[in-house]
Amino acid sequence: MVLPQRPAGAPGAKQVVDAFVAAGLKATHPKDRSVDCGPDGLGLGCSELIATDAVTVYVFPDEISASDIAATWSGQSYQRGAVVLNYLEAKTPAADRPRYEEVLANLR
Figure 1 (cartoon, rainbow, N blue to C red):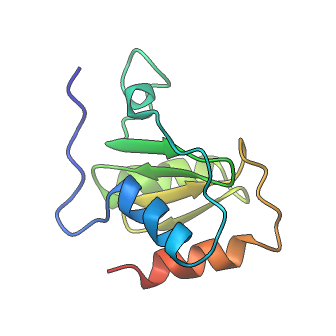
Figure 2 (cartoon, rainbow, N blue to C red):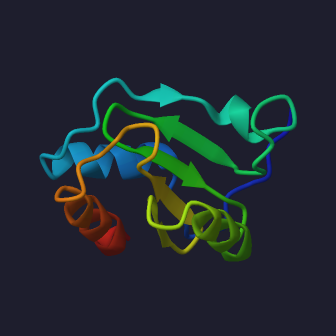
Figure 3 (cartoon, helix red, strand yellow):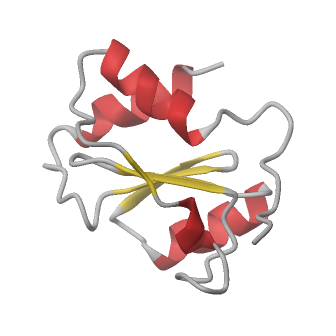
């Protein structure tokens, strides 16, 4: 299975998770579930997907795809560029979400 490439300049899902850990945020038990991006999985069309106990990180091939999925998960997600954080599966406490979002927003 070939997944679409993430856009140039977009951080990879592992890079985002590593940034969370470096910032002292919970991102334990990371699992690469990129296979779920394709038609045999969830069919979301993402490029990369890493699930942790705290948050799930999706990287999409473009910002339009990312914003479409973020809108679908309204209130349970955060989008920056081609990256979407999803809090549904991980049940991230609402009070902790701004810290994850700030780390992602400051990632270069």
